[in-house]
Length: 366
Ligand code: ADP
Ligand code: MG
Image (cartoon, rainbow, N blue to C red):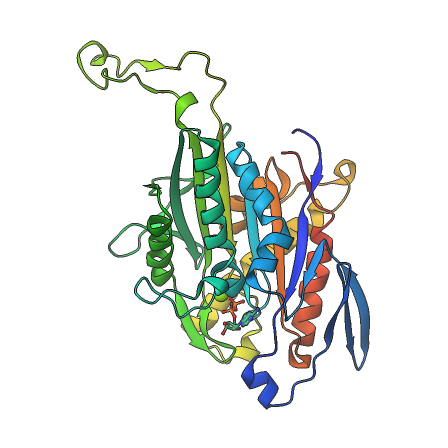
């Protein structure tokens, strides 16, 4: 607590897809073990190091256990603000890593072995909350940033833009976002699936279900026993009517603990030329690229030693404002960089690897 800690950055290399195999793409990324990965192609030869590398053979469970995700869940329960974000080119496996295969719905669940970091974290969270025996209240909110507008993925009806505000105590926050309480795995998984269906996706050349927005699912972990609440039986009634309810802390309570666990599925970076996007699609691509550029810019400035840092331009995009705490503030952050092993993706892969290596130097003070 209070000490500088580095972002934890892990790398996931997905297997070659059927299309890539069929057209004979070369595999240019090789895991060397011990968190090292080697990229070798005609004019490129480079090695990068990460906290962990998961290659094509790594199961979803191995990624959950080896990435530090379980510890992140526990830290959120201890009151820290934790964030995991998946980053990488479109089609590199970000959504797969976070949620598992796309073809899943409530009536057609994915096979348990294929479930992603999110569902595994929910299970872990609910198990832990039962075994700790503490009175935890869990709730979830789910937002997307589409064309620089924030939309609530949990509120029914047509999407409307929510304002992003800043206050001294809360930092950047989204006003009027819906937060839904849940107590079971079924309930949170159903919120996740409902929200994901509302997310903007459009098909283009690289990925048939490409996400066109950044999505942020946040689980709020609040300790009921220690947070200020109307005393039982008093509510909004009689004696509290003029002044509102009487707020009490239960005897022997320590200061209230409120942790968060946020999952960020970034829209993929892409080059408009490669994906054959035009019109509305290229407007989307430009907003996506602009916010990813802003994120990259913040990360490279944050990667400098604290004494040498200049102003960090979080205000350049909604994404960086929402991630300000996770990147440079009091959060604890895990970044999962996702890449394709194919020779055709080489330049995007190298850019993801450079970006991810830079992020390893970023520190926060949880
Ligand atoms: P992104 O979200 O980065 O655009 P996706 O997660 O949608 O990419 O992945 C693109 C495709 O590759 C999907 O069909 C997905 O099922 C497949 N895929 C990604 N990662 C893996 C993996 N580790 N194992 C098997 N298939 C994968
Ligand atoms: Mg995706």
